[in-house]
Amino acid sequence: IMPGSLLFTAASSNVIDCGSGASIDAINPWTALAWIYPTSFAADLTIIQKGAAGTNTRGPNIFLADTSGNVRAVMDRATTDANYITTGGPLVVDRWQFVAVAANAAGAAGSLFRMYVGDINRSPVEATFGTATDGSGAFGDDSAENFRIGNAKALTVGFGGRIAIVSLLRGDWEPQAIRRIWKITRDNLHPAAIANRLRDYGCRLHLSPGYSGTGTQIDWSGYGNHGAITGATLTAGMPMRRTSRDFGGSVIAGGAPTTCGIIGGGVGFGSYVIGA
Image 1 (cartoon, helix red, strand yellow):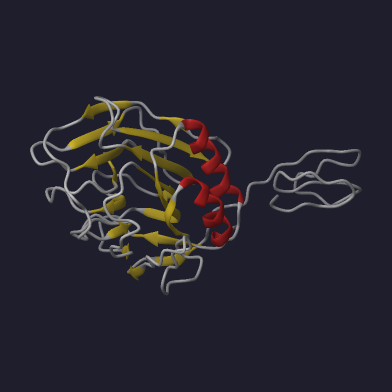
Image 2: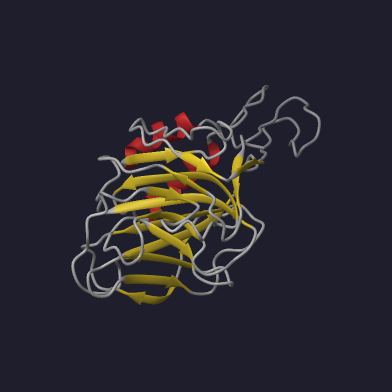
């Protein structure tokens, strides 16, 4: 098991509040990602939010859409909000899943958002939107709004379940890059190692909720947008990926070591490589 995660109570005031700062304000385009373990679904339960609906802010706003595992991404606009909702319920309860949303306020019609969903053993694939409303009017400046994890500005729509990793990247990254980002966040134990590798993708914020307990949640990106917890509690983290390959010895599948084995996808000859 990787170091801990934080458990949020559905529809509560539980939140991690990272404030606002120049490194995370008014970013466009952007990609926001999270590893989540939902235990329940309901409309508007929040994964990530910077700003609030109705305040004309463009920051990341990523919510559960309904009770069927769909996800909604919103950018507030002066006249009509941009509002994209998946179809087919890409999320399930009681499983660690990777969700990434890439957004560009200057994107072509019907492509302001792209969304990707995967899990520990399945690389992320692009989700299909059942609703893709681009909206109209000017996009606002979210500089005065805080970046929140697990809740929205009103603090009434707490996420239901665990959150282990959250990153905000500059750039609306394409599928191949998203798969590399998924692997980086899945395979590295230490948040500093993850953040260091995500710098190649414009990392502006990286938190591993629960890694340092329930005190200040460190922003490992180096930009200093640390998070303060209200209500969320410490719980178990993501499982380590376990794969095995054989090079002249015995394949290890949770059994005792013999002459050669690999744990965590590394390559070894006569020794073990853990988490490579």
